Length: 219
Image (cartoon, rainbow, N blue to C red; front, side, top):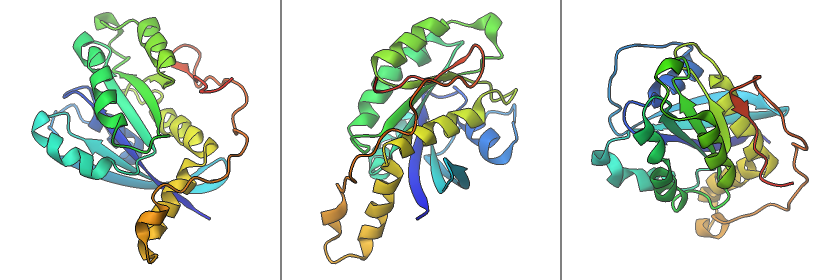
């Protein structure tokens, strides 16, 4: 059975959310800033742990103006990318607020990854790597630093997130929830939870020598 699930990319304005998404889906980068209006959906089919998986990534605007529409789309999401700019301390400090707003809307078992973008601007860094890493660990998030400009760790963000989602069978949950629309009582399948299975990941993995850590949720 193919898996199909939703991932949301959230964070303040100008942290590079759209650049990350475009780099992953279109392998392109633009230096021109254009504010995302509401949200933009991009979809891609890829193999994750030998499972054919379609990931639907929602690039959400960081503007408060669109906040009223966010909750409508967050439902059933099983993955969230929290993005901050390593050169803007305020964008990092707002991560807890973004997490608080999103976590009550998405699937209760959703996987979060904290992403420090613009690692190519090391000279202008305001957010120490260890500070963000410890924050991620304390909240059971995955963590990674990226550069959309240089295409560093961008694919790994979505690959690692997808691996974690599938290790909890969350992709299967979302698939069943979508299929529930054809049942007599669709609401009966909204909270379907499959039987637990052993985690696919049994030991830490590093995607790169310095800026990528895999933080396990158990063990």
